[in-house]
Image (cartoon, rainbow, N blue to C red; front, top):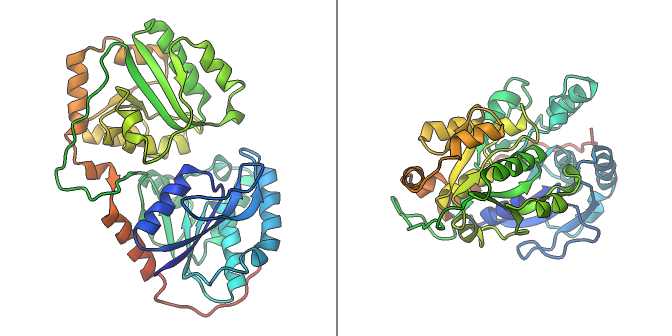
Length: 390
């Protein structure tokens, strides 16, 4: 059985749980180690007890660097009781640095896979800091065996033009995970709630203040014909008063966190539209990503709303589905949605449901294929030399 050491920047990130599920479903054994965003260590993630590397804070770059430096000193002892893994997966740049130290601690040539699902705005800066971070990434990734990323636009707009990594690339999209196999052409009846009011669901990592204000303005204009339901983890560092703002808006509501995949069908089938827009890093990461909510919403028949000029918008345009906005204004939203009625919505929803569910989901066979690809990386061993953290 392939033994994977998974090093992560935040053990509580729902995407970490999904990747662990994929690896284990595909037949791998996983050891999890990483930082946390909580005051106390996390006892359990999918039945695993994470190896705690310390606490970090969202949006605090300097604090995270300090935490990484401390962890680099102690990671050998932290991993002292862990059997030597066959493979190390490093999620994000700081974990790539720790992966090399971990490999040194194990004393042999363990292949490293670099998983990068977001391009942070700091590495895109054209100043000394940005150039230094890109140089650091190139150096740390000089011998990784595989780059795992989630959007073709990350490759086209960052990894390829900046020549960051020479390794092969594996595109693992942010698809929904199906516990059971998906049969060809399989369909499920998906009923939308009675409308009006039309309900827009914004689920997942809630970090975009512009989206929140835009949706609030739009729903006030519509005077109750549209409602917005928010679920997930709000990045409170990005909002002056997220909870107070939502409570003050008559047609916005926050339903708290949810479980993925357990709650996905219920929360998406309770709305008509899925908000697949993010201005958090406008012009960069936000325009290049293909977010979880795109796949999850379409899997359960919610009609996606996106910006036309983004990677998500281009993808939806190719599939001839969704509602695409030319610009991010209440006027544009009102023009696109304000006259919504049942027949038009039925046509929009039917286009989404006409696609094969495999476009939106991974099943056990996909998990097995991913683990097999990782297993093949372990068949060739190279001479090992002790490395220092660079």
